[in-house]
Length: 295
Image (cartoon, rainbow, N blue to C red; front, side):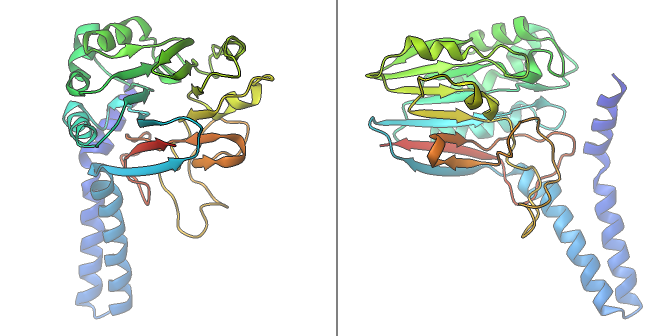
């Protein structure tokens, strides 16, 4: 898989581009071209912010959502572990989660990996070992990167790694969690989202659907959940100011132009994400842990 080494080269040597920007700025200063000097310093600052400061941060967003039941949930998603981030950063995220007050459970919507070289269960167990330190119930399900959409096939190994770290793995399941019914759906992209599970819930149930792709809401029948929580869009790894709603330099395969956060009319919440894909850069979209205060 030659492309993995390209990712690694970009990750380890992209600082050379920062040096190029800085040296260009210095040359403009020596030639007393102050306007160009300011321009190149500005580009250097933006690059350093996108390449280092934002990617290494952890931001916590709290959201108050009106429901007729009470629950406090932590959401993290799209971990994409390996190429750009590893266990050390996951440990940082886990420490932040453990510092959040009054939470009932942690929901992890995966895309667990991103082109890992070591695909055996033991290596993956070590990679995700920080999850065992979370002091609340942790629920997880596999998504498209984990089930061969696009690659690789790691279902069995990832499930073993989750179980070994005390994570409750769910696969198109209904889980009764202290007065709230959790319905976990597998990826739409692999045609495994069994939305028919909703028909097993009654009108008296407090139902939360957790799915990866927001397109799942388009296949609901007559039984609608109280809240649908989805991920997958990444909320724009790079969010350009002013023109983000017009030009979005990222791709996600959804049928509607979903972006992020809460869609009140549809009882839909699209969570942010933690890791990076394609380029190890972010802009105006730091890695985020979402906390849902359902009231």
